[in-house]
Amino acid sequence: MKYPTLAALLIANAVVLTSCSRLAPPTRPSGSTQQAPATLVTEVATSAADVTATATPDLTVRTAAPTSKAPVGLSWSNPASFHTTVEHPQMTITLVGLELPSGFPSVTPDPGHLFVAPQLSFFCQLPADSYCQRIGPFELIDSQGTRHSPAIAVSGEGFLSTENIPGGTSMTGSLVFMVPINAAPMILRYVGYQGQEAYFRIE
Image (spheres, rainbow, N blue to C red):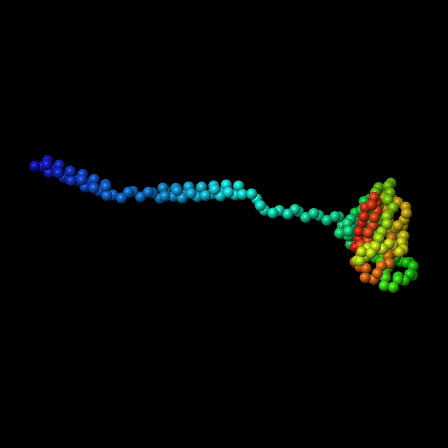
C-alpha cells in the first residue's frame, strides 16, 4: 500500500508544477534591454539632422567689403584739410596758411567779395641731382560750384616759379583769390605733373 500512495503524491506534485508554469507571468525585460531602442532612435535622428544640414544650401546674404577711400588730398571726395600733407607724384604739398602774405598790395576787393590767400609748401622728393616739374595751375571752386582763377600770385620763397624745383628742396608761396563773401566752404584744386590733381578744403 506504500508504493501506490507515493506514486499518487508524485503525480499530484507534477500536476501542480505544470499548472504553476502555465499561469506564471512572462519575465519582465531588464532595464538595459528597454533603453536600447531609445538609444537607437536618438542616433538615427541625429544622423538625419546632419544629412539635412549638409544638404541645405547656405543662403546667407554676404555684402562686399567697403572699398577704401582714395588717399587724402588726391580726390574731390576726400580733400586735404589745413596742415595736412598730400603725397603727390614727385613731391609733397601742404596747405600751411590762409592769411594775406606780408607786403600784399593795398588792394580793396570788389563789393560783396573778399580775398582768400591759400599758402602752400611744396617739397621735391627726388634726389638732389634731379628736378621736379614746375608747378601747375590752380583754381578755387566755391560752394556754388563757381571756379575762380588766382587774382594775384605772390612768389614768396620762389613759389610759382616757372623753373623746375631742384630735388630735396622746398618752395612756399601764396595765391590770392577774390571770391564772394558766402563762398565757403571751398575746394582748392591743383593740376600738376602728368595731370595728377590735388585737392584742399578751405573753410
